[in-house]
Every structure is written in structure tokens, then in C-alpha cells.
Length: 234
Image (cartoon, rainbow, N blue to C red; front, side):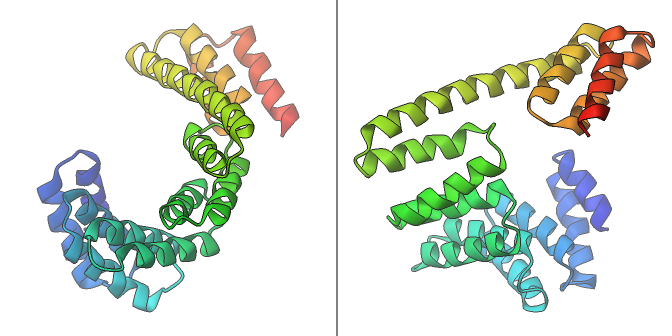
């Protein structure tokens, strides 16, 4: 039921996804991955009360699960209830404490601290996010806002420029990914995407694209050289 529900959710078949995830959750309400899948689906449908009930039930058995805590924080944010943002902040902090190497969790925590006007802790969270993944514009954009509010206009401007460059690079990467999807038989597109992934240190994805190029052109020197470089780097 869980796997079928996730499959339907990935196809945007919400009714069948909900049916199977609810059935899975009824059988094992304490299981974190089931509650996470159903909670995220409720969040997507803005069924906040139902989502909180599912997630909080699972958290009673697994209080430190990072995905459940992050989902509960998001549900609190959407609830509009009194004290919701304070409770969301506490949930995001638990998620970060359990999995500090997740940049998205750091972003959630930083945003919650920023809303609470705790600029020092917001800055620390977004700086951690950048250290974990330097190729996303969002945490840099937020740091630019924070430094502007702290009165450091020079640093704010430099960070804002860096964020613009990273956002442009991210758009280029997304465009290249779309082209590879549209034209899967084009060796040069696979090679361009592999090289870009290599530059971003996403070595697993880079290897996939070099190997995809070699399936089309088994003797391609660029792809063979790229794989050799990845192996030497590892």
C-alpha cells in the first residue's frame, strides 16, 4: 500500500495515492516513512489537521525522526493557529539536530529564525546551508537580506551578486537537463551535462551521464576521459 501510494503520488493521482497511503498508515501508524509520505500528501492538499494528526502519532514512537519533524514544522506554519510559528521553529530545530547535514532543513530553520527576528541564529543556519551545498541561491539570498538588516550593506551586496550568479547557473543546468530529457540520443548533450555535474562535484550524476554517452558512442574519448577523471578523483 505504501509503495503503491507513493507511485500514484508521483503521477499526481492524488485520490489513489491518498487511498493507499491511508491504508498503509492504518496498518502501521507508528512507521515513520509511511507517516511522512501521507503527511506530505496532506500538506500538499492543505489538509493541515489530518496531516498533523498522522505525523504527531508517528512522532510519539520516533520523536527524533528528521523528516517527520520537518514535515510537522511545515504543517504548523500552514495551520494559522496561535503560536504556530514558535512550534514550527521547535520542529525545524529538532529536524536539524537529528540531521545537521541536510541543507534544506537548515533553510527551514533559518527562515523560521528570520521570521522570529533572531538574525544571529538565522545567519548561522543559512551559513551552514551554504557550507553543505554552495550551488543553491536561496540561502545566499537570505543571507543578503540578513546582512542588510544588520547594517552591513557592503557584504549584503556582494552576497546578493553571488546569489544572482548561482541562480543563473542553476537555470542553465535546468535547461540542459531538459534538453537531455527531450533529446536522449544526443551524445554532446549528455557530455555537457556530465561535465557540468562534475564541476558541481555531483560525481554520481556525472558518471551516469558519461555512461549514457558511451551507450550511444562506446568509443567516445570525452566520455572515457571523464570517467577516468572521476575515478582518479575518488
